[in-house]
Length: 189
Image (cartoon, rainbow, N blue to C red; front, top):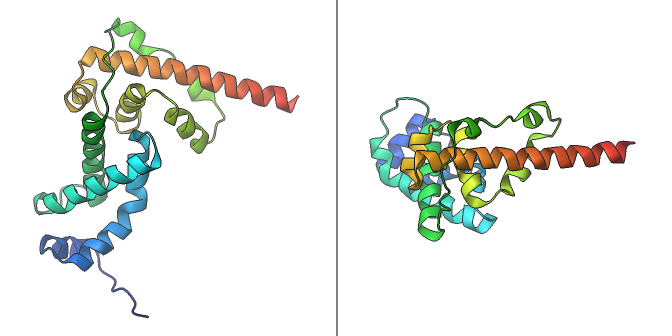
């Protein structure tokens, strides 16, 4: 059995820029599982996430020449995966356009989320249950750190709709957390 050669990230990037297939395969193997996690947050199911992942890596290899070494390479790939996932979603799903609500409502209290004793995987499962529009905006804002303006540009909705969807996502999550913790309390007693 042949052992795969060990390369540094910089060496892999250089070889990928030269279109070396083996280096592309090694790079894919190194980052695929982490990036699958990113895609799963935007997908409706695992098959869709796999499609998003494949499309994302195609873009990574097409754009690798543009990577200049500013910031982490993993962060660069992650941004491509997020944009690729949003692009895929826009192509195959219709984004729900919501009516803008007052800015104050966009700052709905998330005390239930902040004080919850939920494990990260339980919280991610709750986020996965959100309606697609809510889930995408919540992920982009709360997890990826994009502004409402950036979210609006990426998704083709207005900034107000982004704020509205984030507010509604927070409210739905808060309700789900309260219900889940209530059931735990009942079962413990």
